[in-house]
Length: 314
Image (cartoon, rainbow, N blue to C red; front, side, top):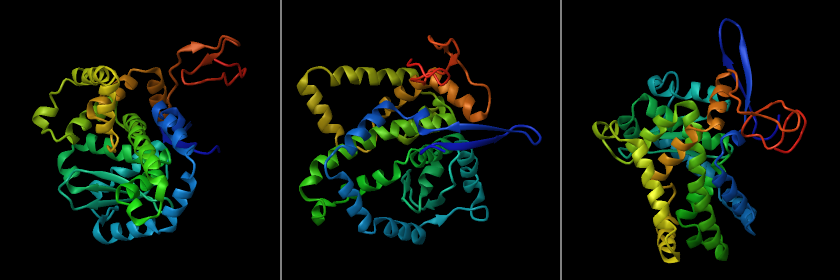
């Protein structure tokens, strides 16, 4: 099995099973992939990761989480725990440890490299309905599937003041900017992962809920109109060098993209053949096709760059 490729087994009827292969490359956002390449090309980055690991960041956070949060299981708050296993099965990933943090602030996070865990807060549970909670958990599982978690841990460490400890020195500024830029873009990939498990509409609704809106308002938001605000934002961003500089200064320390941008991106992707194919693939049903190979005439998928039959470039 290739790196990053996972086996998904879906039960259909009786004793019959479908076996399909899902890879992060099926849904990773191109801006995520490009930003990660830039990050990994920064001189000294592997050294940074090694030093962060040497500090024992993972066991420290793992111990804190174990002592301060409630570990969910079939015998501990099963109504919450039961959200996780079917999502992991759908995505074909090993089930991580799952925790509830008693915190009124709605949040969810994934941490660890050798001991990966997902934590959701009580504030998030209170805010979300079941579909929205599934979307948040699937988003976090997307970080695991895309192997974001290690670099996310580095990003959080930098934000907490690693440079003040004198660990990274002169490398801190460029690496910090590159990591946070990638961090924002990685969220777009995991929104896609969540939409495969739920739907783009549910993911968009979840954005509105996380923005703090009550259900009486968020359930009635015209998501298409909200997405158009991201287009207007792009116009502002691209209106001259000064406006672009101002917007970059606002976003450079953010961990997530603006909500309107995320809504636009996920609704747009939800209309794509790539999304439709992936949903059918994850369910073990027939793949939606969109064309023929110009070389051999066989049916191809829209996300292929080379024909898998004749190896011709598409």
